Image (cartoon, rainbow, N blue to C red; front, side):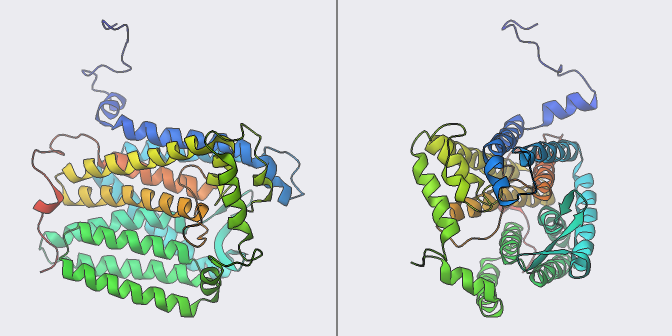
Length: 393
């Protein structure tokens, strides 16, 4: 026992795998992710009774809560297992997950379940699998690997391979169609490309191409035009979903109505998935809302700072991309709830109900925790993203 009366879980002289993991892991990032998962389970108990009103076949008011506990357990397991991996192990698992997810996505037009006009899920009995959720972290890791191989100048066409796989993923997403995931994956992929050391002129050219692509999507997909036209519309019927969510947030005030006292959630469609933020804001107020935003900000800022100090180009770019993915998805979901952008059908990381989303987020955080572990030589004084060789002339 120490002088403060505290006995550490592991001695620093302990050479076991678990002890090494404990002392090399960034426990602040791990604690933040666990806190968000805990909030997700807690908010599922607030949203489940109202969510089952839309499905009269469910009698248990906490049906979604019990399932959320299972999903959170699976996500936690994925996060912890992945955090034990070496950087090479992260690459291997990411490649396998990417290939598997792309293969399943290619089968969706033939075997997928169509919900609200989109074939994004495969029915696995009591559960549904959304493979695009697993493409996000695995593509980021794969792209970072390819860009780092291109830096070595050994003839590996890493940039071409990365863009080719990205194009395949985007094509399969547009077939579903899933515009929200397409934009999220593309934005994060381009950020990874920039962090890999691309000259500014390439970034500007890609940004222009991306803008042209968004315009093309607007004229190609009617549901995208409909969502944009409804955004900010005065037609109450066209904005019913987001109006109810906004009312729930306003009703919460500073400290909320109280546990289980929320009433607006009864009229918010998809409240336990895309609009779980509004449920928490109504019952627990601005205090919980800012706490959630603070946790996401902590994960992104602390994670990016650690990533920038890593020596290995692959580990730097992959870790930074993964933390950016978490932060960007959280920003999109919260912005939708606050009626700042059109609805995207995107979950709030670690908090929204959904098995595929929770496990994929566990995978994402597990990869990031693994890559930022304090291994011998991983962090050297003076290492920074700006000291690496560019991958393009």
